[in-house]
Image 1 (spheres, helix red, strand yellow):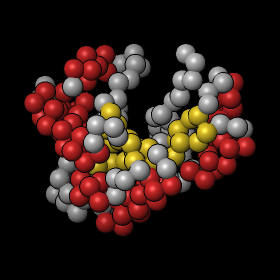
Image 2 (spheres, one colour):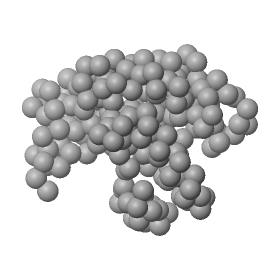
Image 3 (tube, rainbow, N blue to C red):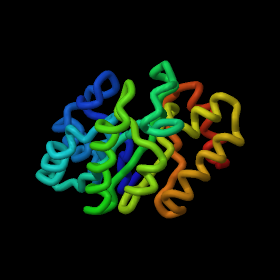
Length: 194
């Protein structure tokens, strides 16, 4: 697997979902001879500078990102009543300096305007601040996989179409994971079809 790069990576800054310290992630990438590695912690960019500096010092290209929380409606809607209904996951990766600036804006606005259980963004912010960003559908917590798990393939296709419209075909990707989780194995063929 020459030139393989992990693009969906959590560090110890992703509370309850990541245990790897940034120095260990970078060291593992070096050992595997990866040319680059991403950091996409949940809902924030707290480890971004530490990661950027560690990766650059090790001769690895750092890819800065975030596994954002996106509201199913708007960032200001606080009527869901439960954490599991208030947001979905969405992976965003900076392609360039403009993308990094947009990640900062999205993260800040998520905390300042969208916080409801978690710091949330919405499609309005994505439409406004998507330049320089690559978007993937994320894990099973993403909107598209969640719709598939709920046996709503038409809804999954509609949601994917909305992201495609915002990001375009060169910057929006369906994320397929292999973790040995039965639900993931069940939706992967449908994700590939989309």
